[in-house]
Length: 326
Length: 288
Image 1 (cartoon, chains in turn blue, orange):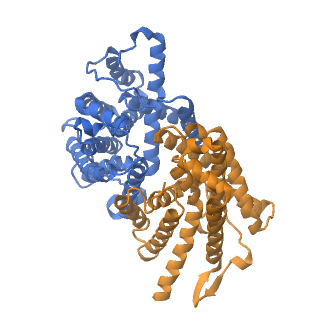
Image 2 (cartoon, each protein chain N blue to C red):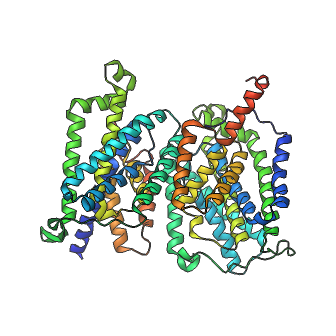
Image 3 (cartoon, chains in turn blue, orange):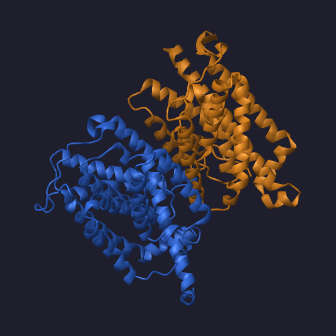
């Protein structure tokens, strides 16, 4: 399921640069779909944040939407109460989600897979209930509306076509991605893979396992918060569903569909998933859920590693002589 | 006030024992076979729908519908275990989680397709409706019946595992598969039957629980947390642990919803997180 551990290679591949030109090309090719493309990029960022925790550190989290929702509500509440400046709202959201990630991270790293799963699920559900019951702050099931998001840099106003939202989301995604790419290819990132692959051996290398897991959990939470804030600001709405368990489960599906432990998997998964959802949206939602379930079962049984894993296998079949020596 | 408290306690115990009945099979899969099966609630839902269908369309009496719900869920469990689950016993927990979430989604969609998204009504026989007086306390007749059934099933289950040859085979296979196989136990068959037993109990619980838990296609998702909670808090792989955890959770959930409805389900999630932090391996550890 997870990719074979490799020594990090920090150089940008030509294929990666091409990949980042794709959204730009999509901007010009499909001007009618800017809102959808922006949302794909935002959910992609959210999936990348889960990849840090799940794909790199190996923590199965079923409550990652908690941090997404926290970020969304932070930015949303700021904008409702008169602080509409988008960039500071984004930072505040990342900060709030990151601090919550730090606090809950200490709880999450205790225990084994099952306990972690339950604690992340529990934290997510608690936040959902809190937001649901505190309707006087969050609007409850009706969601938070009346957000007044200000102009970006005081110049660019968010327009109905989604031009500004597109470039804003693209820039934030690219910036955060570059930083995270550096993080996972650093010795710190390598030690996370070490923890994932053999947690018992890492202490003998002088690694404080729990501290590193808490650190990456915090980073993942902060990035999820930024993604949530981006969605809130670009859609000018926050709903309860941004916090809920279905969103967490969907995110895991997106990441696994794309491929875990590769950063790009989250982005590819988000694109494929959301395009498919957009395409099938006209059908009964029950059918959509059925096919998502079937897809998951098939991925687990036959296509471990998701789309990225499949492409890597294909690549190795085409170019067997490039096999790296361990 | 005191009678009120006793009533809440009683309802909590009834609710908890139902949770236990559904979850005990999950305790076996998670604790003994080391499989995180989030689709367990789907088997309970299946039992519920079988029971409802038999009652409303075929006029089967309520009591007779329960064993049939057990059998149907057990059969489906057996088939799925043979076809799919067994391939994933050695897979990572992430794979198991994904696989079982996938099954859950499919079951939700299938239930919506066949029965629609609405709650299913259940018509209880007259003798199970209304209140009866028990030690000066007015309690729901169905709650008493529920506790009675769960006690019976639990005792039978305890005897099955502790006293019979099949129980010994389960315990042996679970403790050491290789050694058990070496002693001539057909481990894969034992696992299949155990899985079927767990699914069947979930189905029985689903049929019994329609009146208390309700039954609609979101059932497996709505209660997934509760079943997982019972097992994770109780300690997977034991029977006493989940029983204790289910009763505690049942009482706290009912009490929370009764006394502090404004925070509702928050109580139970907070309790779960606290218990998991205090006992990362569950209230009761399984003795190897």
